[in-house]
Amino acid sequence: MAAQFPFAEEIQLPAEMKGWEKMYAPQRLFSKDREDWEKRHFWYHDKIHAADPLYPLDDIFQEAWQIALSQYTTRVFCIPPAQGVAQRILGCYMYIGAVEPPPANVIEKKGELFGQRVPYTFEHYSSQWDEWLRKFQKLGHDMESIQIPEELYTFVPEEDVIPTPKGYTEANLLMENFNDIINLIFRGWQYHFQYLNLAYLAYLMFVDTAKKLFPGIKDGTMGKMVAGADVSMFRPDEELCRLSRLAMNHGAVAEVLKRKGSAEEKMSSLSGTPQGRAWLEEMDKIKNPWFYVSNGSGWFHYEGSWINTMDLPFSYIQSYVERLGQGERIERKLEGITEESNRIVSEYQSLIRSEADRKTFDDAYRVVKSIYRYTEDHLFWVEHWLHTIWFEKIAQFGRILTRHGVLSNPDDIYLFNRFEVPMLLEDLATAWALGHGVPTRGPFWIEKAGKRKRILEAALKWNPPPAIGIPPEEIAEPFTLMLWGVTTDTVQEWLKGTGVEVEHLDEMSGFPASAGVAEGPARVLKLLSDVAKLEPGEIMVAPTTNPSWAPVFTKIKAAVTDIGGLTSHAAIVSREYGLPSVTGTGVATSVIKTGDIIRVDGSTGKVTIVKRA
Image (cartoon, rainbow, N blue to C red; front, side):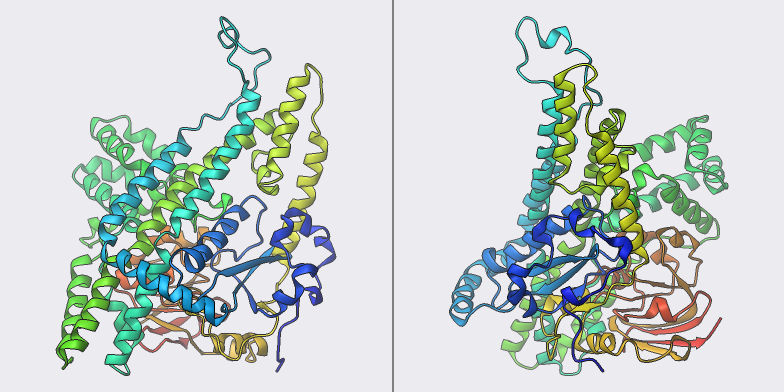
């Protein structure tokens, strides 16, 4: 077995990817001048946030979270001895690594500040959430209100010249607008991490307290204790359920929604009746914000959102209406999950003998129940609502660049990073300012875009190494374990190169993310479009789950993922829907095939193939 993974400079890339590094800013790459520091760290492919090759402009979210996550740990709340999570891009894929701890004197100073700052936030989180939401919604509305020019005038209109010239033109405004939305998206991600690290920390502290008081307590049991949250990320699904029930009150509306056909066809049919128009008006009232949810993770421009791919939410509504007609319940059983959570907590509280221990447990539990909901609450507003607004604004820039021949396709703007897009806009503004017949460097940009598109296509076919550098003897960094699900055992399996042929592997292990046992046919999802193929009673097997898939959690039996730990999205949502779940198996989508009968034990973290399809 290999003792280490190759270093960055030792990795051979396909010839078709030559020049890939020019797509990204130099600080995003492994470099000779930082080589000593980089080789002291262990890097692994971040399949949660960037499983696929990164389009240069989509990389902005990764840039933003690297700064935001890290600064709240190192400089704001000063969590000792944790440091930040660093990123590097290699061959269009993103690798991350937990930064080594600081010197003892820095840890000591951070400890003092941590003790002053964190308890106050834990105590006042409920009121702070209200303030956070008002602040964040204002930021989103500020981005929505930016008016990006749809066209550059042949001649500036009279009202912008007489009686007094406006002082600037639409071409100048175009450049200003891009700078404005860049600043807003970075500010949005600063807000994103305002409490997130503390939410994870509260869960870690609760787990540590519970394990000390109750040796042998299972991870899944502790997960159930904090389940039962009423959070924003579940609201889009709840609105679909409400619209489906509303449709059932008018049989003709329900019949239209059950038909085969596109969302556009159904909306056209509904608009022809009073009941249908009333239903459409109710849907229009909640579209912003609740249809501003990504079809995937919210991180990539090509995923789309419900608001611009209405076939997806209409397919969910069709399924819900059909199930309501069969007398099924479609909503999440929140009251049952909450009752079960309360029951488990009460049973464990009854086992505590000392008042001091009871207070320690109760305090830790109160804090985690208060702040842990932030993980899913903020997720909707940042990675879905705000990102949907961002993608629409970027599309407007892409369209005007395409109309003036700087690009050949609006989406090609994503082939340029955030430092390069201003060059395209300045090129357009300059040619326009110089006068009639002056060319832009459109052919140059179009050729560059075409080359980059081919590089990304080659990168998609390349199989990047799972990690880079020398692994530590033990993976102990808590966020690495909890969110990404990368453990010492995982790394050892990477080093062995799996070791067992796929057809001979009938059992795999991961995190016991949500307690319970389920057995049934597997449905392996590797593409976003595959989620629509899920049938009632199947077990979902995916690289990771996406928040917009919430509607399918009411009809599946269990969930299994390749990546993710105890606080990953799949773990949280499975607990909220009362489903067994095993996360971070590493190989589930490679080993399991659709139709295999599998058994998922969310209490032990074992997934077993009972019968091959």
